Length: 317
Image 1: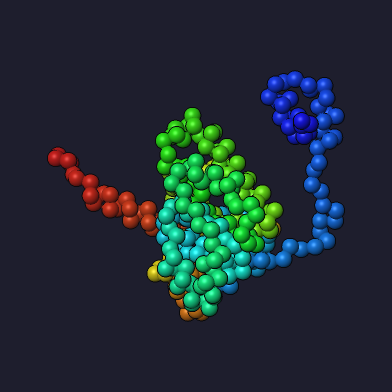
Image 2: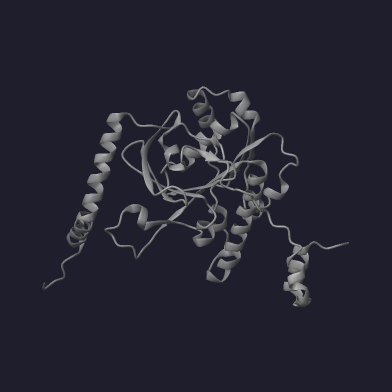
């Protein structure tokens, strides 16, 4: 059986033999190349119908990847539910529910509020509920072939949950293995998304940087888990944080085309929704006040004062 150029190169690397034919084999490798890549713009195939679309340049195009990260209850899953409703009303949606957060009741509520056909949405959802990382990474190669519809969206909620909760990857010695698996896992889904003309949106957990300057804004102190292996894969990185009540703030942290920006939105029966003018003005004022207090060190001063009050005074002082 004749080996492909890629297989020959991998064998050279593995056996350290045949390097004299290295350049000859390289010339046989077929590389995708676009002529005049600026001649056409990819059409938008998915948007939320809210101000959050501004962070995506109006909406998302085929093959794009979005990472949503933030602490619990910051709105990550609610954005996913909204995107699921919008995408499943037009085509197939694959959901990887690694945190057991999928809610049929919530999907129906959002679909009803947005005037979508619930039966159409129900027929367009493939729901996978992996219990371990082995099951999660096995989903791409085990998808139906052909798929039972035109794929519009792949959702992973959340990307790192099962990788962080397994003893196989505990300790620094196993970090490299974990990162390789995560990169491979996302690459498999990206291949499918590019082939099918779909979008990938995944949520991620965060950790607080213990050495961060306390005067920095929250988005600079909380980081998504997964390190650089995850950071370099997504086209959009969106940081979410809580405001008062049902109001949330989304910040575009990184994208090669759009500069960093923030948008304020709310969570309601429509999933995610725009604020009224009054709500928007109030949210902006509160956020500005919070940032000024943080820059002035008021929170640090209050914390130190509280610690001093709680510290017992030793006898003789």
